[in-house]
Image (cartoon, rainbow, N blue to C red; front, top):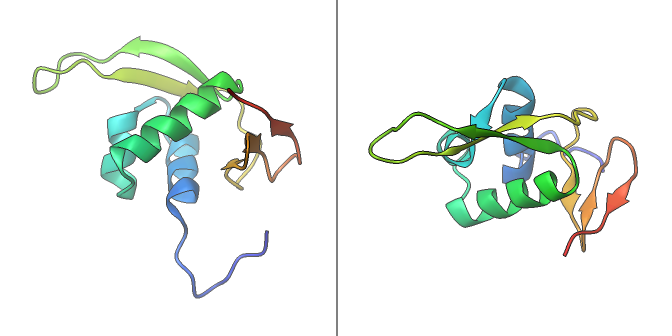
Length: 100
């Protein structure tokens, strides 16, 4: 996929960049830092987890009376964000993982 220099990165690319940069993160971190919707961020994280890119790291300490699930990126294949196309396509490796 060629990048258009005048076009801002999409929400998937932003989330992937945040995941690669943070040691651990929550879905709420992704929403706050990228502006993605909660539903989209939850869906993307769930698919990455099912395809073996993320590992559940437990719950955070209570923040505003909520315990958030924490995740760690364990399959960092490169700068291009895996995209959701009837599964999960990794632009770095060319692999496609199919999820339910």
